[in-house]
Each structure stands twice: as C-alpha cells, then as structure tokens.
Length: 226
Ligand code: ZN
Image: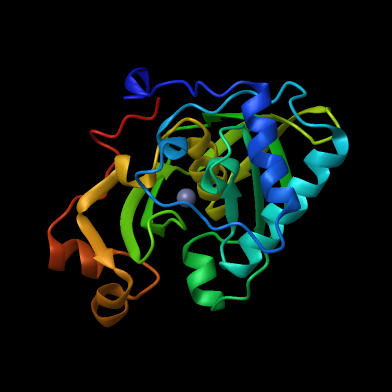
C-alpha cells in the first residue's frame, strides 16, 4: 500500500512559506479534510526547514488546534504542512469502564519529529476510531496493541519509547498521517458509521454489537501494516 504513496514535492522554501502564513495569521488554521494532497503524500523529514522559534510556535498552534477540535493528536499535514511533525495529548476525562476496556490512560503532551513505529508482539486490538480530517465519521480499525516509536524531540534528541493500548493507537494514527495513510485505509469498511448513527446504534466501549449488526470482521487479516 505505501509503495503507491507519493512523496511530497514541497521543498524547504515552500514548507517555510506555508508555516509562516500560519504563524502570521490572526486565527487558528483550519484542519484540512480528506482529498487535500498533504494528507495523501509522504511528508518531508524535518531537517531544519524551520528555525527553532518557528518550530516552537508551530507546535504551540498545533496543540491549540488539537485542544479546540477536540482531539488527542494532530499531524502537520492536517494543517496542510507536508512535514513529519505531530503532537499528541490525551487528558480528556472519559468513563472509567470504557477507558479500562480500551486500555486508555492519560498521555502527557508530546511533540514528535520524523517518527517511525514498529509493532511489538502479535497482539491486535479493534475499536472504532475517527479522524479530524474525516469529519463526522468513524470506523473500526484493528491495530497492533503495542509499538516501539523512534522519533526526535523538538530539541533534536533521538528517542525510543514503547506505547501500548489507546496510546499506541494514537501514535500509529498520527505517524500514519505522515506517511499519507488515513485510518480508512486500514478500517473494516462495513463498520463505517456517521457519528450520529454510531451514537444511535453502536455506542458502547466494545464493538461486538456493531460487528453483528453491520456484518464485519475485526481481525487484522488483510490489513497492510507496512
Ligand atoms: Zn487523523
């Protein structure tokens, strides 16, 4: 699947221009939606295209946009910036029973550059997930339960960190954005629901009711994890 994803053609100058426009605006930038080319291309590795000050301010804006949405992650391509940068943070209080079933625990704010993940072990978990760039929809995605993430921090330090449960899902979803992959590429398409239909019929911590009612499988079979 990833072989057919084009690499962004944006050079350092173009990336800087897009970011400077966002930094000088008086309002928060909109989140671009599926169909925008930045969401379907491999983003450029960060290699100093932005100054330390620009990078810091951009990360601050991404965090605000993520909070406002609200969401638990945002990748730079979602602001139309083809750069391998994402922010993650999961502090939203949710029902403890649902949190337990999803293995969801709070994730402190984290900005990652040039991330790459590798699945750890064979375990997969299947849950409904949504995306701020596919407004109003959700679908079931089976993903590796644990991953090792290699990334750079904004001050340039190389890190390796293990994530599991819902945190691993967020990490994979955001890193996928930087590879031009949307969650629907990995989803059980028969599970696709509008937020309203999900709330009316399938809103529960697990997916067994939806699996029966909509007729889909939740295994990782057929899912390309490349
Ligand atoms: Zn997304």
